[in-house]
Length: 253
Image 1 (cartoon, rainbow, N blue to C red):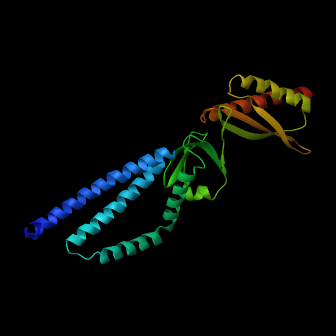
Image 2 (image 1 turned 180 degrees about the vertical axis):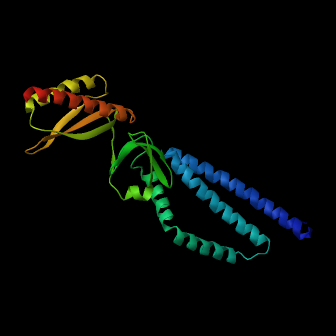
Image 3 (image 1 turned 90 degrees about the horizontal axis):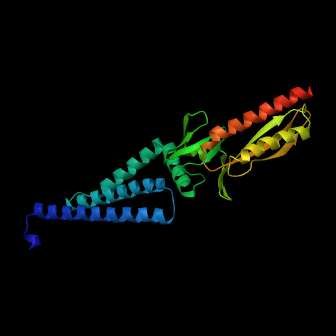
């Protein structure tokens, strides 16, 4: 009975069936990817990257099936897609590399949204991670967009700790000349550390890392639960260190 219908009605029914199947497959694939991202505890950015790719593949398959029904050869479409892909790939190899780098960052998760990171000389809170770029809010309250391919080629420091109920440990160096004796300098450190131990979730720490004829260098560690707190606490802590050291230095001059 179906074969007795006019060809255009047959084609219309087949195309309708293809569209319905494509819609059903799209919903099933989307649901599967969302559930997988949730089970694997991957960031939601991964979901936003894979679902459009899956939809694009379904659309391409749907178009080729409809062309087959219409009597059009699919070979030229495949060739056109291959040629177009080659041209686009040649013209935008950097974009493709950046896309792959973005997928790697989203899956391997060297850092996450909300982390405080340092990429060479740029540091701040990660506000957004996409396939193409990572958005970082710096202590100067400016937003820096870094493409993901460049990030993978640089040294990345993530200050996330996740230890003993503390989420972040921010470390920084500072040098002091020899005008103030070491015992007096350590007493200054202890006074300030004791003060901040009542504010922070964990007592700040410090240790000497180097010394030469002109100065002694120390590494300080501040522990916080919110990455944005580093913006205000580190400058305040550093300012109190410098102020106390200046006062002690004047007394020893």
